[in-house]
Amino acid sequence: MVAINTLLALIAMTAAAAAAASMLYVRGGGCRNAARWVKFHRITGRLFAAAYALLILTMTQRIWMLHERLSPRANLHAYLGMAVLAVFAAKMFILKRAPKLSEQLIWFGAATFLTVFPAGWPLAAASLLSELSNRNALRDGHVSHRAESVI
Image 1 (cartoon, helix red, strand yellow):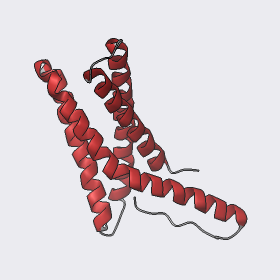
Image 2 (cartoon, helix red, strand yellow):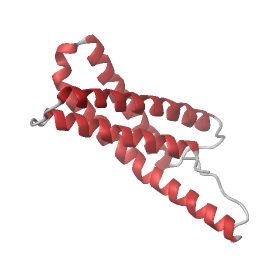
Image 3 (tube, rainbow, N blue to C red):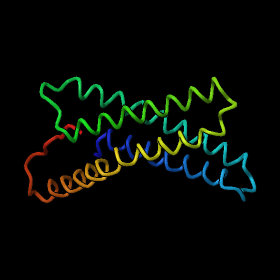
């Protein structure tokens, strides 16, 4: 079974990509049905927020249980994760408190998108590939146990 962290990360990254692409399409002009694309952006944004919130909870719990220091890669990953949270929270705050600035939110969306992918894609893809190769190795009888990674 694929780790819940990997699944949540893939859902969050896919939703972030869909939300960013939909808003770039609307803002780029030539969009015939902007209301439908804005609704799609909101749905994918909420999906991102839900998956990301669950991911933050599982990863915080996982880090809290560690009794050793994180590697530099894990530290960078954690800091990028907190940066995504900060940028997304700022975007939601501006949307709710200063609707006149909503035209500028495309930059916060782009910052969220550009922070999510370097933080997530390489690790999620590596984790998924590792999980699949371990499953095949276990099935074929080549590996007797599976090591859990921190991230």
